[in-house]
Image 1 (cartoon, rainbow, N blue to C red):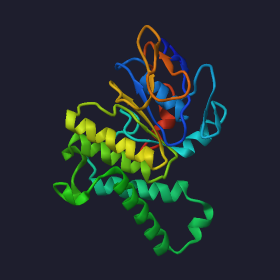
Image 2 (spheres, helix red, strand yellow):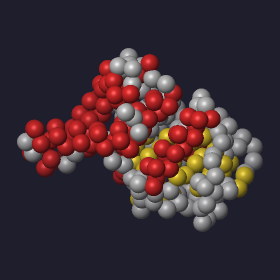
Image 3 (cartoon, rainbow, N blue to C red):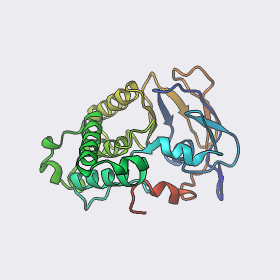
Length: 253
């Protein structure tokens, strides 16, 4: 992908099976977020091709957006600090029912639809490891009062409500202690083990992942467990182009 200030990334090659934990490792400003948004159908690449879940990019970007979901991506899918945890969950559940459900589902009785929505939320919270009762004010806890790991779990839970096949998480290890970082990676591994492919941007990837490494000036070879060559290069990051599409994730764009 090339923007007004040069290449955001180029020369990337990776092959990952469904249910893999794929990491994009590199320093801030090395094109990590652009690559994440491109692979989830939110930004159109300048050249090259990719296939996500059997869907070709960039030709079928809209279809890729339907099977993927964004966890925390700064400037794109940020949590609203003024809202409570329960309000975020309620909003995402309503958006899911309104925009992502099949037309036939709208014909079901309201009580049945509400029960199905609650079940989705509970399943997402369980997968994200977020216990509302453990929060200071339970569901009434404001986002601004959440610890960094709790906020990460909430963002992931919101994304999982849509039952995506691909989950993308930016800055997965940002501002986490060693203990919290280990918990975060354990969480992402458990989601991947459940069959959802996870794409995570980080500054330092743990072992045993499909690793793509981005640098500001040269190509490095990934050392993960992928069966194909994994390489990446990047220059200046340009995440503004195409961000409007990605903002639709929140429903507040």
